[in-house]
Length: 311
Figure (tube, rainbow, N blue to C red):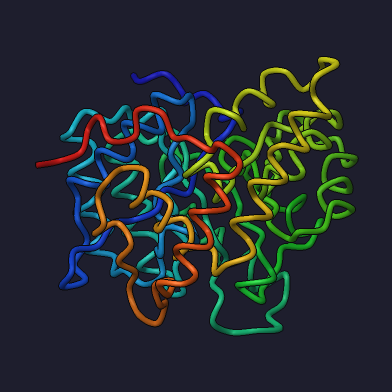
């Protein structure tokens, strides 16, 4: 019998997904990016929002996961996003992640229909759990109402924890509202791992007893974010937080996913990293030069990024 997976803590990245010029996913580049992130002490929330996950089919995501595992990525460091609009797609993708022993899944609620009830959302999560039917399943809920337009109320979260205490074990709060994250932390849910959805809330989250953060900009600034996670209770923490905020605010001043890919493309020396899938659009030449110039002025670096670049 396999030991139960340990619950996540720390910093995870919703890993950006590389596409070829024909818009097909490129597993080799993804594997190289994942290896680099792991070398920076950051876990892998592949198929997250900033992975363009909802621009990919279930089959594409399953094939990418196969390639990562075959390429030596440790599944205990992986929290794949498996929440889809269709119940059966969520079950299928979650079962695939479980087959490899991934230590958790990051699960959006079904997000197409709006104004659905807590009862409906509870039933959706419960149906996935019952159909997957695995004692090893660990679900980290994904609350991102600014994008999904479907949120998870505190009462719903508590109801899921009470019904499935060994399965529903954490949440990523991407509401962008610290008071919401703080309210979760104040509920006192036993060993329920609460992650900020951005490193801009990392210091507050750690001081309030949270587990870490799952952040888009961990794709480009992983070591610095991990440093604050490790040193949140030191005299240097406020300065570290301010430095993280400056890099994040710079990335946020452009469309986030194209900006992240532009940065990875530049610092890896691999221009194809800038490709995004429609409906997203790559940064213009002017935007690209502005962004990279601003990073240069900050002496920004991504040490070792190109080391695993595929030929």
